[in-house]
Image (cartoon, rainbow, N blue to C red; front, side):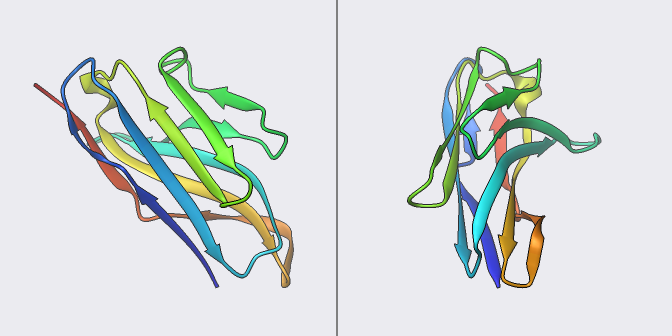
Length: 121
């Protein structure tokens, strides 16, 4: 069984910074894409940033230049450094990790339960 757990959310003032982390644990073979999504109140969930197995990152236009995604291959973790936060960044941030297991050779995305980020003065 695979577990995906996020941490690092909280309340921050506009212009501040937060760092989110997410770790995959359990029985899996390989990790591929690691992603951060967010869901603002009353809105659909959106992809914020992703990082491929090669280490290549990609960002939503709304966070380019402010957010940085990174991964640690040894610890099976992905982090999201969020700088210059704005009230529009408020929402629940979810981690999604695409990985393979002994019974799933093609790979499936596994979601965490989310962590709340609130940007407010």
